[in-house]
Image (cartoon, rainbow over the protein chains, first blue to last red):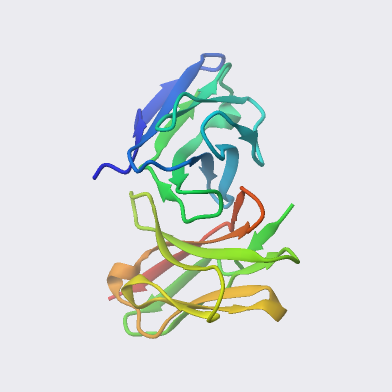
Length: 112
Length: 113
């Protein structure tokens, strides 16, 4: 019972480098989400995918892109990393929009 | 945009004390409400949820929450906390016609044995 799996768990990047965070869920959920968690700011939604084939911007989308590769996978890409993107990134999925979300273990990303 | 306020940023309690964490939201329409818990080093887990019906909802581990529509509040309660309740607690709101969740900034709870 893996649930939501995120890779990698930790990553250090230099400013300007690019990388993709991977997320996969095995619960046959329709909706998937990417959040960032920063101290004192809670979780903020970056992008979400209400269903396979659709993606929408959340609260803080600038500097990020996403791909809903198939029903299981939803990746987050940083094209040119900036120190302000240092954060813990969580992927989540839910059966449908508005349903309770299931979270992955997070990716701790540091950008120097 | 909706907003969710958790006024208690850090709460310290002794074991067996009662707990109440506040959550207020700003949205005039129908909402779905959630409390999540994040234990140290772990991912967020659902504690309880409210969609409709009885405004007093019970969740896991003895937690409950009360939805008061007139006050736009969804406060979390537990009659007697344990050391193992030490964690960060997040309130979240979803307009039931929308796709986005809005999370509060979280309340860090420390329970002293």
